[in-house]
Length: 507
Ligand code: FRU
Image (cartoon, rainbow, N blue to C red; front, top):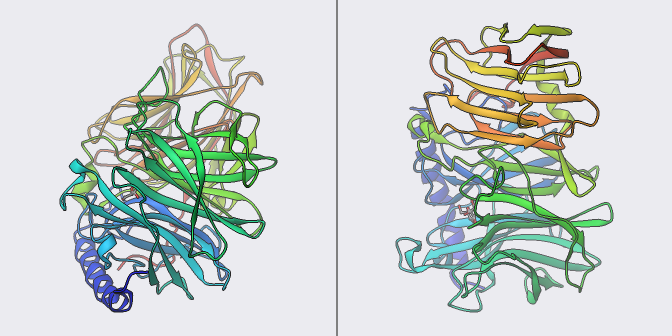
């Protein structure tokens, strides 16, 4: 344990005060044109990974990687929000600031469990740059522990898993669970040979940890690090997931700078993981990374992803904030895939639902549905058998300038497309998701926020998360059908507004 712990805990409240003051200063200049209404984001500053997701003392807690000093990555702290129902969220005091020597350059990602003594226990990575400035010469990273009796005030316990080899370049992001009386920890490692691996440790007492095995090694030698690994059971299977650095794009897959996905297989404590499926992406959109799962009190497996703004330009950075989570999703098994659906509670935010009934649209026709939607929860079903149009879908965030993001079914590709080529702000480009056409129908649920779009395909068999930054003025939603011999047939289409998730407006 680190000798300086007691003094450092006193220092932490001073550091947290300083960080909160910075957030408040940044907030004074926050521009809300793209600031989310129904997604978790920091009041100001930069956020990345969801951390320490847990249900504790009657509330859901979501901590997150936070830079309170600017809207770019750096100075990693842990921010915190909580909710009684997964719908309405409350901002909590910042949870953790770097104070120990081993975390001098940041309190990095980690997870939370309810400890054997009933306290909320977090495991996270203490991070230092080897050269003191940046990662050109690699990192010094160790797994640390902190405890809290109220989810707000944390007492740091120092390092519990030191890095065993100074040639290891990355060693971070512990995810912990208990099973059969034993504690398990997995985290990501970049070996001296630059291979991406997930290591497993075990412990009887939560403080002393022993190396168990390399539970997963990425088969591709170009994949040099597996960030934010997670491992969890679903029915009789185990899912191993990670955020891969170094994966190269192929076809429609792995098009983002880094890519988060999973494999499904079997595992018994004390044994190896046996992979039984291919690698699948968690999400087919432009902006999804570092997801973390946790268990709700009713047993559901839930996940939050970080909508990672991988590619420049990142226009929200000018607005004193950057980064948001996805909506919380429930994860279930669907054959060799995971099904991801917004949690059912999310629909409680729906307001003023309007139904547009069945629609028959001429090819190259369009129909304005809503003149100005800051947020929307859209449900539509397209009859694929009876439609002949080549592309059928919605122009979202459509402003007078012609800017919009198109979400459509593309019959040439046989896939759902999210296309940002008509956007003035932010990275453009498109992403696609495969469609199971066996039922002859395509169900789309599209969650629109002020600066993002999530597309849920066929009840969560596929899902896409992308930022979309509308231009000035009212933000319309328009139905379109393009090219082909015939019509577009929409069986049903409804649009609701979404209420804010915040218990109180930011002040
Ligand atoms: C993933 C990640 C983690 C790390 C954290 C630092 O986005 O790089 O591996 O712990 O972010 O902010």
